[in-house]
Image (spheres, rainbow, N blue to C red):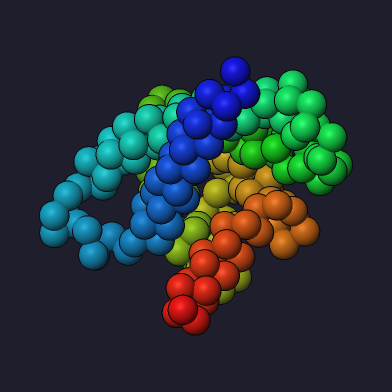
Length: 177
């Protein structure tokens, strides 16, 4: 039933996508000097592959369940807007690209994995030549980056804003009581 789809799909997608997001933030933006005393670059890559695969698959299953609900539940379909369908399609595409990129990472040398880290850290500190780190990388990674930026750009105009707005309103209401 549709109730089952929301009870299963929603937490599966939401918890998994939070793990994916945190994996990207901590995995890409943590400088080598901060983790090399504890783990090697190869161990970090292995953790990223395992955790990224598990979280990515869970997110894909969750968003697929929610997408099917969006298209098959009459009430959800009736209240849906075009941007709801666009963002769901972009998320499905993004998660699929991420999983494909993770597979490519399993087949690529460590230097390719590290190039992505150097690119992300360069972007974070506004290093103008950061693009050079990924110039020779797979088009799958590049498309994942472009689609990620597109999602980030349209984020405020979609229902993705619920992740920012709901906790803020909930917290404010809690303290007003």
